[in-house]
Image 1: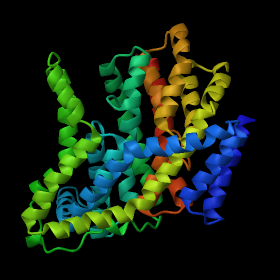
Image 2 (image 1 turned 90 degrees about the vertical axis):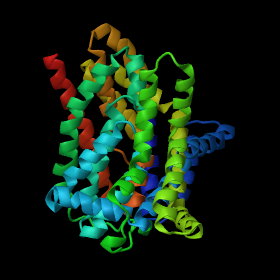
Image 3 (image 1 turned 90 degrees about the horizontal axis):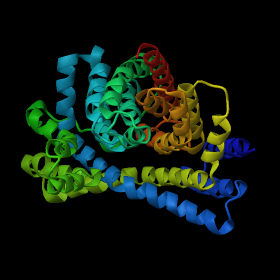
Length: 437
């Protein structure tokens, strides 16, 4: 009955947005309230769940997305994105540009949180798309596949790192096995799958459409890369410091503060304001106008993601994830496959990959002790399952849809299928590794 209620509520959400033409944020609020009632949450608690979901989601994402949009807009307006795009094309050519973006996404995705990497890299995708008249989804999906895989498979991302602790796995081995699985998953879900998406028409957000600037007026390549990738460098540095200086509590404290995504993005924006703004003869008034335009363009994205957060919180507070997992736990399926199925099912119902992974971990932990399965592979199995079929109850789905300005149908056939391929290839890889090691 619980699964039926969730299915009907998700169907209602899709119908409101597609057939009813209701604003996605309002649709999320209406369906969240209805779902809470049907799943038995007390009247007095439903609005608290909605408010908590909106608040928690915006608290962790609003600053990062807003500052990321400002940085991306400045990189585009200054000509930095145009310079990076033209340099990539010179090195890789049009034929291999997908691979260039995919490799870039994998390298920066290891230290970056998914949402930070998304808002940082999307302007680069759009710049290449506009400048060389290439379909945005076709060239961009391989990079986003890289970011998604690193988010779900590889420590030190929050969910994999937490799973390593819960399963008493070895973080180094998990990372090594994860990279072995990540490479084929990214290639299949990225460049290979994207060949089927060339006909998807996408008009990306105008905020990232760069003005055509003469080559002699463009900023230098180093300056453009430095401003764009400074957040990556800062996050890598702050992640490594605690390992290099394990005895220094002060350095660890500083690393935690300066490694926070909001602080990292703010530092990067301040630096870019000078290097790509003031130093290129833009006035402060012009720079602030660029930032203001960037915020206007993403305001609705923020609201939609917050609505997805409200829906996720209602499902979480109803206890539906625990009841589903408990039901599946008693089925006669091999532990690694069972862990993947539990995580995938919770992901389908809740939307959040992190919640799906952590909830599944609590269920399969006793199973791990009884079955003597390699804990490193269990981490990866749960991580792969937690990425399965992102759809309308996942903030990442809406981030992709709204940035790329797609219909729900095209988002499902591109983004959702890509996530499913990543999850399935991940499970196959885990089972193959289990036969070898």
